[in-house]
Length: 291
Image (tube, rainbow, N blue to C red; front, side, top):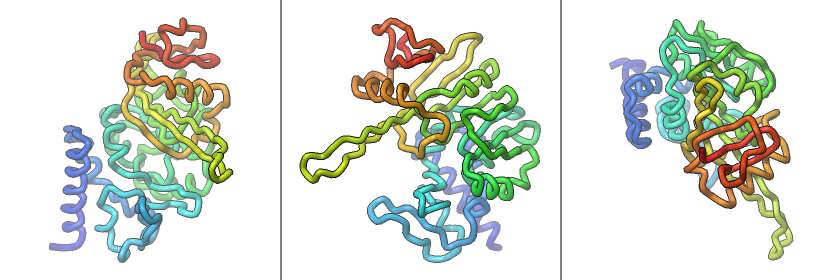
């Protein structure tokens, strides 16, 4: 058996294991993870694999087989920027449910690996708009994604760059609020995967250093006419979204996390004046509500 055939078997097993661990049964998503070569998006090996107990550890060699495990791989390790754990993306992509022929927007594309999986899911009749804030990463993504004719890479602020109406908006960075561009850009029936994160820094009286607490949750937002249906997916920790954060929304988000109840959220409103008894979160210009 030649090397390419052997790696294809490894990728298939990797994809099967990822979906099984996530409890996701989706043959199209499994096929996409099996088809896209992760090594094409990570530069030359050996690669810095993030081991939570010890930090980055180089893979034993440049053999791509070491990439087909549920581990983040550093793309700019000195800045703690990673090609994230695939197990995080499996359930999020399953909730986004990209279909053949649709237009998907990927905010926070990094070097393009998960963009390529979106491209496999929308197929050659679909389109993917990949947006990356970091100029170096955007350039790497454009090179890596050149074989995918249906992908366009844009460098800039993913919370403000305009794009054509999208069936899927897949955000891979932590915002404190949904950008107006994202809500306006959702087509009828479109799905927004929205990670909301908050950070709080407090003084530590024991060692006089600062404690940093982080909280985050991912919501699926679906546009139905003038309504935005909302559903909690999971907890999350993710790199901040440049342009997608403001202090007032972050404070409101932290208060909401403190009181709990995010699993009961069913609606997003572009209005911050809902009655408190209906609201999980109220912030200037938007709310997440129970009904």
